[in-house]
Image (cartoon, rainbow, N blue to C red; front, top):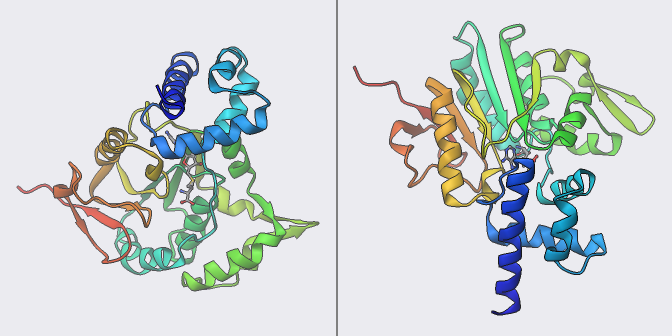
Length: 277
Ligand SMILES: C[S@@+](CC[C@H](N)C(=O)[O-])C[C@H]1O[C@@H](n2cnc3c(N)ncnc32)[C@H](O)[C@@H]1O
C-alpha cells in the first residue's frame, strides 16, 4: 500500500469512528477537501499520523471540537455574490410579496451573514412581520457567533460595498452600531431569525418552506450526500417554492431536476413546479 492509500484508509477509519462516537457524518464528504483539512489540522496538533490522533479524538470531546472546526469551512459574507442577492430581490421577492407569510431556510448558514442579509432585504421590500428565517448549521460554535450578530468593524467596508451592489435601498450603516473594533447588528434583524443546529447528513427535513438557500455547502459533499440533501430540500419546499444554490453548484443531472425550472440564467435559483392536475 502506498503512503497516499494509507492516509486515505486512515481518513476513512477516522470518519467512521467519528460518526459512531459523535454522530457527525463526514463519510460522504469529498475526499480531496477532507484530506486537505485533516492534514492541516494534524500539522497543528503535534501528532504524527491520523491513526495516532484517532484514539485521542474518539475519547476527548474538546479535541474533537478542534477537528470539527478544522473540517467545516465557515467563511461567509454579508450579501455574498451581490448579483445573486440582486436577482433574489428582483425576481424572487415579488412572488414572496404576494404570500401572507414567508418561511425561509438557510441550510449551512455559518456565522449568520447570509441570514442577516436576507432579513435586511425582506424588511426593505416591505415584508416586516411576515417572514421567519430558519438558519441552521452543523457547527454549534459558528451558530453562537451567528446568534450574537457581532462582526469585526473592518469588515463593514466590504459588507457595505456588497450591500450597495445588491441593490440596497438605504445605508448599510443604518443596520449596525459601531463599538470599539466591532459592529453590532440591530436587534430588530434578529427578531425573525431562529438559529438552530441541523446536520444535513443525518437530520430530517423542515416543513413547507417557501425559499431554501444552501450556498457553498454541497461543494464539500460527494454525490450520494448531495442527492440526500437535495431530497431533503425537495421534501421541505412548498410547490412554487424557490431553491438557491451556490455559484459552483447546480441541479443539472440531479434526480429532482425535472420538478424544477431555472429562473435565472447565471444565478442558481430554481423554482419548484406546481404538480399537474
Ligand atoms: C462555506 S460555509 C457557507 C456559508 C453560507 N451559506 C455562504 O454561502 O456564505 C459552509 C457551511 O456549511 C456547514 N456545513 C458543513 N457540513 C454541514 C452539514 N452536514 N450540515 C449542515 N451544515 C454543514 C459548515 O459548518 C459551514 O458553516
